[in-house]
Image (cartoon, rainbow, N blue to C red; front, side, top):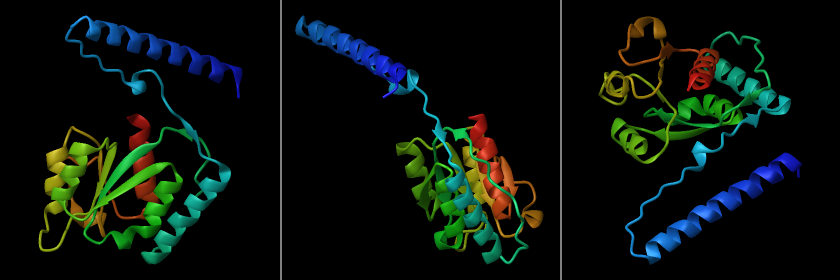
Length: 195
């Protein structure tokens, strides 16, 4: 174990232990003490995307492009350090996005799927979601994706992934409207790098 990591762990344990002891003593004296401690305030996590994972993600995006019947572009996803993030994908046909999901998972994105906006809003209430991907049409509701994007405007990035971005027009609340797997991955990576 690296000495720096060991020192950080020991210091963190001492600080947390000291705070815990102080809270226990205050509570024993009858004080109404409320304290919150967020590890996220102290640490940030970066994960190194290995060359092997980047290559597997590239293969998954190429498979998605091929499945969509588009000319497979030859792009490479570069290995790099990035912060893991949870992505919510709302689509009534999630199996249509298997390869795109695999690519995002290989890039350190934890993909949670919902098939309707009601479930999506429940996930958003309960989980720390960094970005939403949505389709436009779900079942008989041709505006489901537009409505969800508008509802989330300003709260977090929304990427609309649709069959034809050219005909989708402007989608209020959407950070990007894309129709190709490479564009999807690029948008997600770009938007999450900002947050």
